[in-house]
Amino acid sequence: MCRKFCIDLFGILLLAASFCSVPAAAQTKAFVEIIQKGSGEAEAGKFATAAETFKECERLFPAAFECNFFRGKILRVIPGRTDEAIKEFLAALSKTDSRADLSSVYYDLGQIYRASGKKSEALVAFSKALQNSPENAKAYIGRAMAYYENGEPAKGIPDASFLVRRNPNDAKAFDLRGTLYAAIFDHQNAILDLSRAIRLDPSFAMPLVTRGNIYALQEKFELAIADHTKAVSIDPQLAIAYVSRAAAYCSSKKKELANADERKAIELGGKIAQPCRF
Image (cartoon, rainbow, N blue to C red):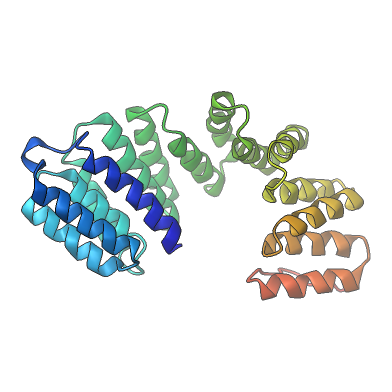
């Protein structure tokens, strides 16, 4: 998680250093130095220290939204500091009128609301991100997932469809839409999209898991097991693939194989709602 976060943060810090949106008063050597200092600390995994650096940044450059924005991004990965992160993002929103910057902040705000289980707030934030930047692909993904998690998968399909139209070679966009179709039991469209995702990216395990689950619901257990086995071969650490294959094995009266997959899933951190007893 640290590596992924640091790479994401570093990219944003480079954008800030380009002065594309920094207030004129903040375009100083001192501003660049404190941004670089906080960036280096975050990249080294010293999140608490980096948060304090960006707090100092705000004291020195109160008009620069970046200080709050970057501090919010750091606080969101520190356990127990979610509420502080939200306050920082809200403060950043009050300091910029750049539509691109507003979209970025609203996107991050949506992500932290999602992670906090505040799905309605997340939907509002992602929608505002898109109002400010209708081409913000990450915001479409975030809003579609928020709809899914909020029990409204059908409402996420137009967002996923936008991504598919935007890039017909995006395997993840087809996987997302296929997952949403599966959630509303539109198995025909789900299988079409998931199969497209599999063809576009043969190294992508999740669409195989989801398609396998659909086959299992249709009682096509051999097809389901084949998909789940392929998913396991692609990603041997994917717990949900073992959970899904265990269920398909159990329905096929293959108790020993099912139990073996259940044990593997638990070993990987997965959960078995109902162990196979047939």
